[in-house]
Amino acid sequence: MTEFDPGPPSAVADHLAALPTYAPHRELFWYDWGPIFYRGRLDRSARLLCIASDPGPTERVAGRTLVGDAGQRVQGFLAKLGLTRGYVLLNAFAYALLPSKAQRATPILREPQHLAWRNALLDAVTGPQLQAVVAFGAQARGAVRLWDDRPDVPLLEVPHPSSRDAARLVAEWHDAVETLRDVVTPDADGDHALPNYGPRFLESDYARIPARDLPFGVPPWLGDDRAGRAARPRRNNTVERLGSDLLHTIVWTAPPDQP
Image 1: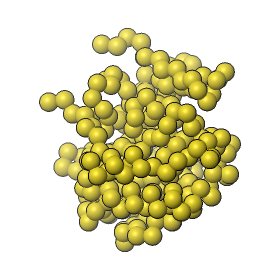
Image 2: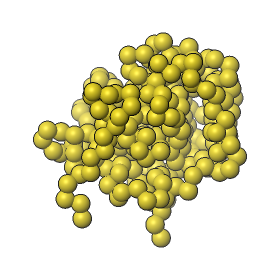
Image 3: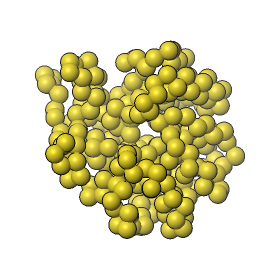
Image 4: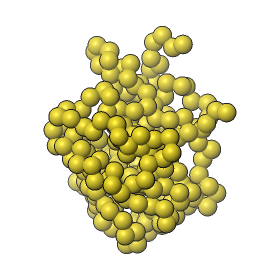
């Protein structure tokens, strides 16, 4: 049977649909493409909650967060913990930030309507099985620190998967894996004895996005950009923003030689 993500439970879907407007701040975000909310389990069964930010054009095509190059790095991180399904991934902001506007956007995390909506979502998708929280990057750290009812589980704050400080990223992710292996129960089909990160990020540190995290009907190669990473010139994502129209146009390129 083909696995796919059927979408959120009805109560969570209603809450997502009640997202407070970002219109007053639209100049700070890739606004016209709309919000991206989650990936993973929304039924309160997750043992690990990860929060990041800045869903990109691949995420827009998939309708799920953390599926492009950064997401495949995060999936590799999850794989090292033996997690194949027992996780939920959310964003600090539901819209993707324009990188140059991040500092101006940070105060929005505290705006009462956004704060209440985000904390209610965090409460709704986590339950007694939660064992740890990971915040990837500054915006995620800010969001987690504002979560009033955060469960009493370990919180690890690490660099965003797209961090330009590669040495710090692998060092802190390595230490996080070491810590979390003693905290988070792996899935039955997972292997938490995979090699940890070394001095630099390798292709083996990536993992493809599982079909169970994606909507029915997407191409089988969506969420697996290894061919592009091996190509010359390198292409980290199959979906990109058009340089001449960054706000409104995206280009999706199928990898060659599909079976």
